Image 1: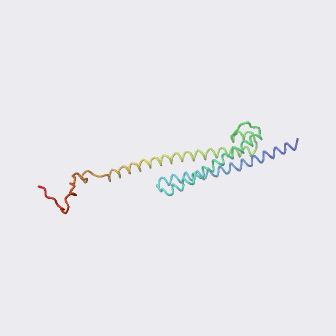
Image 2: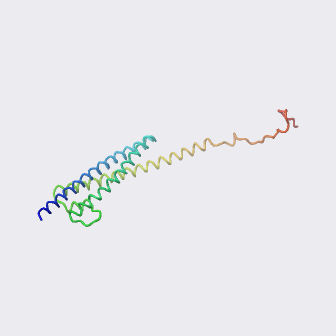
Image 3: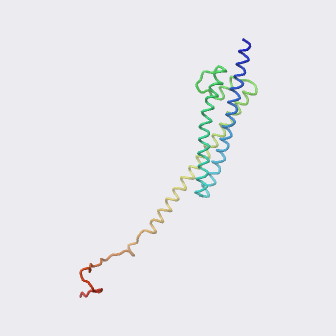
Length: 178
């Protein structure tokens, strides 16, 4: 029986360590994403299309990595949840922290708070960037409309008359009518 308890504690240790490592990776990618979104705001203001595209590629890469890490987190959290007696399919960090004690509990609560704050910052900055992008598009469309209107053919310079077809008279450049 004591071997089972030691084995279960080792399993909890391993599951916690995997979840902890995964959460550190997730937090690192979210911090990178926060930097990318902050840089995006600057690039939108500067209106540098090449750098905006490069930044968007980095942003997309971060989002794909986060999706993968989130799937891993769900797996690790579920496994740890089963070991500590939670029956939820996808236990939350605070639920897991409630089943643990000491530094593990404190660390999971800290991860929860830090991730929550970082995600909210990314969300808010991204929302602001969307407003900047929409504003830039409206301004650009307005400018393009003005350019289009400026270069449109003017009736003053347009052709009004018609030319007579003189192709059946060969050899005469000027016709006499009168």
